[in-house]
Length: 93
Ligand code: SF4
Image (cartoon, rainbow, N blue to C red):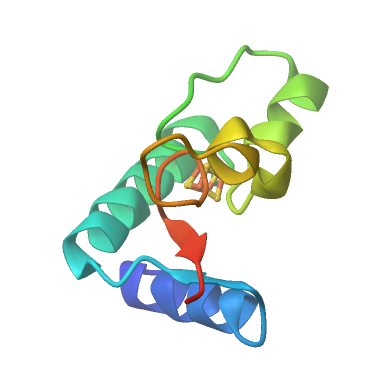
């Protein structure tokens, strides 16, 4: 999967949901690059904003997209736009 395909898949994932891809394309592209580098280096599409632990089961929580609605950045955004930790997905207005 290349970067364009990955971003398309994320767009489909966000469709008809209360979140959307960040409208800032530069942020989305930077995160896509990070996810694809992690896939190359570590074998799976891990979040580029958090460190893997080496524990396969624990690190499954870091696969992108993750379960970000449990994160404080979604539950209590405190001055930032409500969204995932990396701001890849933000609340749909
Ligand atoms: S925090 Fe955002 S970029 Fe990171 S894994 Fe979750 S959805 Fe993906």
